[in-house]
Length: 121
Image (cartoon, rainbow, N blue to C red; front, side):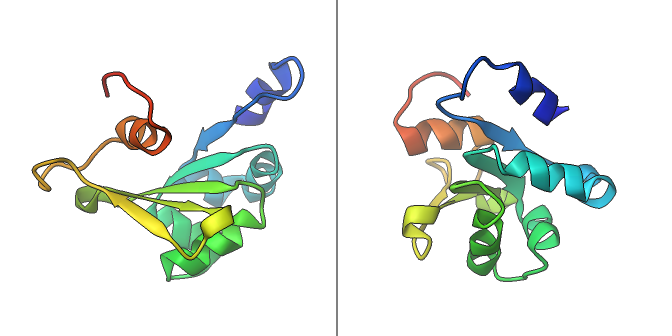
């Protein structure tokens, strides 16, 4: 479905992001890999990151996923917030937590903070 949406865009989008889930990783891995070739940002939780890459370490997993297409990975880590890994600086990562360090940020809030955008999450 995500690839069908991308096909409907006239020209090449300035930025394409995808939020996947284990269903697609398990049931349609070839189609998912084909779609990842057209995506700039992949939002995925930590267990799905490990599942997609067959790698337990999240930084090594990110490097593997970069080979599939995305240049930025936002790993959702439940109560630990979110971690962003960028292909251009794959040895560095950032973790985003709420001000209280008790409530994790949602992916939209994390992306706004990463890219300096405003708005409500």
